[in-house]
Image 1 (spheres, helix red, strand yellow):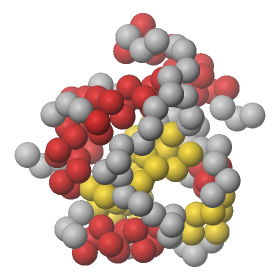
Image 2 (cartoon, rainbow, N blue to C red):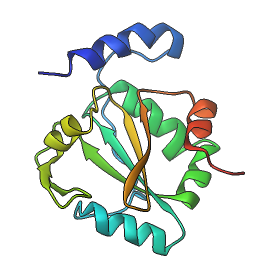
Image 3 (tube, rainbow, N blue to C red):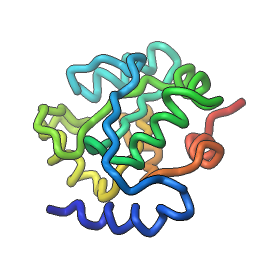
Image 4 (cartoon, helix red, strand yellow):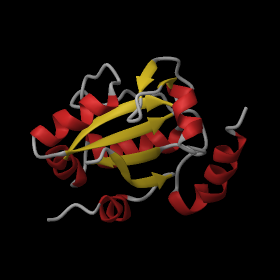
Length: 154
């Protein structure tokens, strides 16, 4: 499949990131938004709460996904700040759940990942008014860099 590139990208950064290149089971945090994957509705609900929608694209047993989740969404200084500024939903890049995208087109999770050019996991999309994609962050980033890329005001 088209996920050889993420493995190559991931393996080239293993030493620098100190992430073990072995499958790691993880669960999405309980505070992530429960959703029917109606993205326009999710964006509107986030806006009504003064937040933006953050879409976390992941792959089951992905070590980089596990580390990014643990360091930013489960524990660490970033978690509270992210939870305050974003509604977060998870999309599995190999999943078959239906997703209603911002243009009204219905995709499976994996079709949407391909359409959006998600070629590595984890990947994060920040959605904003319009609705549109404000930012796309590909791959694992250390906590300080990840927070900076999210552009969260202190």
